[in-house]
View 1 (cartoon, rainbow, N blue to C red):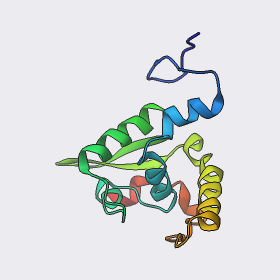
View 2: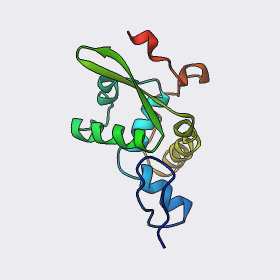
View 3: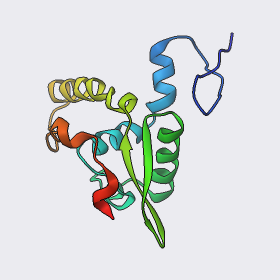
View 4: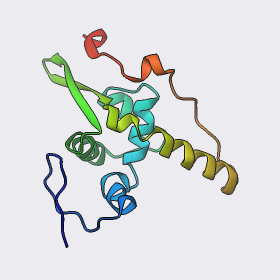
Length: 134
């Protein structure tokens, strides 16, 4: 039994299980790392590309598009020649913060050598206005 998503992609879900559906949205190698970086205050393509994990440019562009289509991130133009965008998490994207925290805690407890790269930005900086980028 396929049911439909309630977002722009209108893709059929494989399962009614909320874990399976969440993994369809953010279960690849890169999506949660991009969400982590946006929670830390990275906004531009260049800032997101500069992540220590070394995301390839084609994958970055694809994942940003997917996150936007899923309603987890939004973009706003901050330069028009050439056109450049800043990305921020939506409230729905911010809601994944507890998932990231659980993964961080599990990794620190169960994978030797794991450590947090840096603490998340304070709540007042998490939803950043792009007007300051112009």
